[in-house]
Amino acid sequence: MDMNIEKYTKEALEKKALDGDADAMWQLSLLCQDEGDEDESANWFGKALDAGQTDALLYAAELCLNKELEVYSVDHAEMYLKQAADQGSIKAMLQLGKLALGDLEEGFMQAAIRLAQTENADKTPSPEHQKQFAWYSLAAEAGDINAMYNVAVAYHLGYPVEEDQAQAFARLKRAVDSGDLVSMYLLAYLYENGLGTERDIDKAVEIYTESGEKGVRGSLLRLYGIYHEGLCHIEPDQEKALRYLWMSGEGHT
Image (cartoon, rainbow, N blue to C red; front, side, top):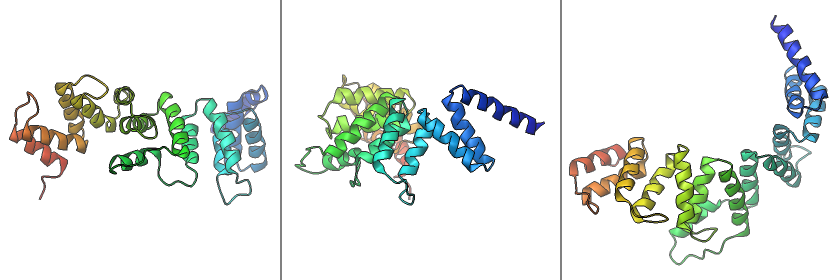
């Protein structure tokens, strides 16, 4: 019975594929590959690729980036990835951002953090970082949480774009609303210092606490500092301070 279902599924896919369904073409390629029919798999893969099927485009780009294959070509990989990105593929956008670095080993966010820690650093952006930032911005708009955080950090630190705390706040807020714990610490920091939004100590502590209780170490250490020294209307509370220090791992012997 399973074989009949499998046969029916393949026949149904073939009908859809012959009617021009690009997704069916891609699925047929995978099915034929599983069955060991490499020629037929390649045939349907080519048809899916010509039809602009997103997964086929991503796979073609992956093949073109494999230096061990004769089809190796960064230019062709970028072509396929741009087609996939135009269809809204976040994976393609992020891969294009990676390719934009060329020979650079350091991404724009890592560069932003390094420059922020370097006295009198030259923040003239490199073309590679600007290009990568542009792709990450598209990925962030498409809903990728990690891209939202990376772009927010860039705006916060002012590299490879002009510093814009309002943009940093907006993007962090969206990332946090999407469930990103990593973004919570920086969002709380912006609330605490009134960057990109009105200063709100209570809101900052609320976010530090929520993220700290979920294991964000930076938030735990900041809570230790707040309750150890006090902050604005928040009185020192050494019991709380020691609790958060212990939770961070710093208080362990």
